[in-house]
Each structure stands twice: as structure tokens, then as C-alpha cells.
Length: 262
Image (tube, rainbow, N blue to C red; front, side, top):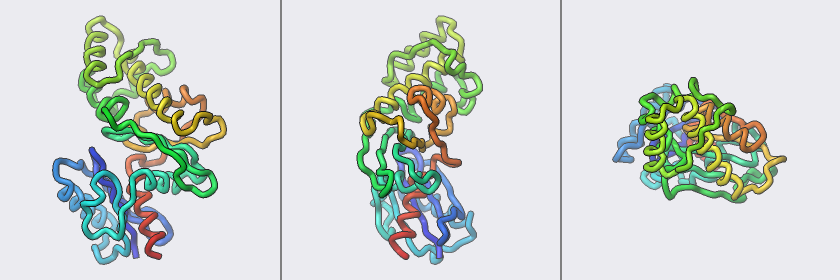
């Protein structure tokens, strides 16, 4: 039998199928869109097709994320906080601090090093500052794709500061910098440092001293190497990045499905 986790987030809907040995057999991701039900049906179908399975092959299904209550045939549902904590430990056992930067929010989670349970968490869900949506806006102003930003980022050599984290004001600031002739790489470096600084402050709310912590990152923004590198400089230590950081919540939900139905 197989076990499925579905994470219905604000921007994307992800699903993961595990076998009884906790190995990923299939995963998929689609835009959440305006209708959760359509996204849920689509990501479920894609994940089942990817594993060559039928719906009856799924023994347990756990949903998570903002739209978790919309999965009508779920075995149970769990919050995204506990699912992200569970998911990251599949890749990196012993992780104590997880930073998750998604499309429209970011969160920091402190995990007990022995029990693996969530001890504390903090969220930045009041605005899109420092999230994937923020990066999308900055990339649009720079007239490039987000994935192209890493190749131009000057990294720690950069000195340009982005003082506004509000997406609207930051957009105006970047437009002004472009008009002044500031090099694109300098602007990108400033954007990444601004995100890292804000994220570092969020992480400090759950773990004031992270010298001995094992830190990992998840969410779509974890794919942006410049952001991760800037955050590592803030923290003064390495951050572990899973192979597919966007599916961590769904992976954790699938692990719960396995554990709850054995």
C-alpha cells in the first residue's frame, strides 16, 4: 500500500506518495489558483499517474496547508507547521531550526532535537515581504526570470542596500536604482541581503542562539542560491537544502499518513 500527503498552500498545491519504506515514489506541484478543489484533483491525478497507481492503492491520505479542510476524503489533516517539521527530518534527521520561505508567507520552526516535535514557531504572514511573491515582483521590475537572478548576484561583494521591505515601496526603490544606473548584480545582491536579514530576524524569534543548531530551509525560495547564501552569511553557518524544497510540507503529511495508518 501507499501513503499520500497533499499540501494546499497559498501559491502552490503539492502532493507526495510514499511506499511503506518511506521512499518517495512520486510527487507533483501545481498552482493553487482560485479553486482549491481543481488544484487538489489535478495534483492528485498527476502524482498517482507518476507512480502508476490507482486511488484505491492509497491506504492513508493526510492533508495540510491553508486548504487542508477542502480534501474531503482525507484520513486526517495536520497543520503545515508540524508537517514541515516532519518532512524536513526525513531528509535531515536532527534538524532543530527549519526556515520555510513560501510564496506569500515565511516561517521559522524550532524542533526538539530528540523528540522531533515542534517546540516553537514564528510566522510572517501579514505581508509578502521577504517571500516568493516579493522576489517575483523584484524580478519583474528587473525584467528577468527569478531563476536568472543567481547568475548575476555579486554576493558578499555587494554593498547596495534595499531599505524598504514592503513590496510596493521596494519596487519603487529598485526602479529608482535602475534609473541611477546601479548595476543589476548589485541590486540583486541587495534584494537577497534584505530578504536574508528579515528572515534572520524571524529565526531569532524561535532560537535566540543558533550556534549549536542544525538549520535547514524549505519552500520555493530555497531554490534561489543567492538568498540561501545571504542567509548563511547572516547566520554564520551552513544551511541544509533538501533536493526538492517545495514539497517538504506534502512529504511530512505523507509520513504522518504512513505513521497514522500502520
